Length: 591
Image (cartoon, rainbow, N blue to C red; front, side, top):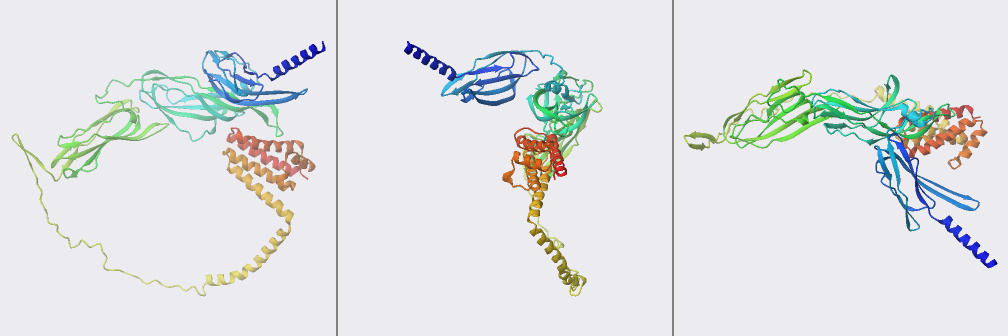
């Protein structure tokens, strides 16, 4: 009986041991039904560590956060509990039914997969208006606006679209990324590159706001009628204020990801008027000048010249054809080489385009390049204009003569050799007479400068003695020298931090060094003693308030964390000001 009981106990222990060692790997979602304006959190959770984690494709969603990894490892009543989670934050792209596919991971040379999860995305839902909810605060204080220069342009008239992200003064941006770019299928478009994203002051609905210009474009509509300017979608990482405050009385901020979407805009493109439209009009719209030039007007046969047909000015320079030149058949003409020198800014295309023709005459004589014309639609007067070039005569001085006598063509070569006549004035440019003048020599001996240089060493002796005594006294003050050197380094690094504003990593390295060197000078400690507990104890002994000590350590922690998180220039300036203020408080309070 006892043996059977022992066997049962052993089997129970084995089953229990197997149950606790069993691997679990599963997917969990924050909700299975959400609005298109909401976010979905997906966690892939396992109870043992593994390798080669492979997430699903998240079709129908955009990843706005993650993957974030968290690990917990605890012992409760002698039993180990391990948990590892890979987290993603997803934003739906459109309404519909979607599936979070299988994720996989390898644990102990065995592959485990999660079960797919069905998700339903509905129309936008009304979010609760909770003034303490960071997401609600962000939605009420962040606005993405598409500003359009003209909503009723002509066909091929330039319009500008500027996307501005407006932020209430209480919102601090960390990072801005494009989620979805608009498609401009009915436009010729050119994006104006931005050197950097800068915060500027402005107003939104009559209230003071900060704004960031996120994108600039120039559009030339290629169709008439109503055309859509599609919305731009941004993923914005911001910090919003909470009800908690720090030692300086400022609100403590919480960081979150949010989506900003501009509204769709519609423009009504007008057709160019038919009345007065020239027959040779090829679609040029703007303000232009036109000319035809040649590299030379006189040459010999078989030599070449360049003829340039050029249009310059402001308008849709890349969207129309240049007129062709017409030349006599006795001039050999090659296919033109097209060239463009066009820059695009917020006012549209500006510059010039040209066709360059290479022309080679075959016979002696005079050949006209007839006048040609170019027509365009002038936006200022809303009428068509025509520009014409001047007629150009090409004079071929020497070469075969193209003569005709009946049906027979006779070509005679008129080569006349001429004797070179020397000119007696051909070396006239060489000077044969000069007009030199003597240079007076000044003596340096016994001048005022001479006596000053003689007496200067004797005058410097008393000054040198004073400086030497001062240096000797300073050298004897070892403790004072140490403090002065540390103060000098603190000022150096604090000044460098100010110069590095805008460069995140360099700024926080310089700021951290400035704080450390200040402490070394103030507390008379070495670098090896710079620990949080040691700093706290020494400052407390000197009578510094606990809030100031906490603030100082908070700034040091910010220096460490800021190197790995997105930071704006506004935040850097705020940290710099806090550091300067904290140093001032310590100086006032320390005994």
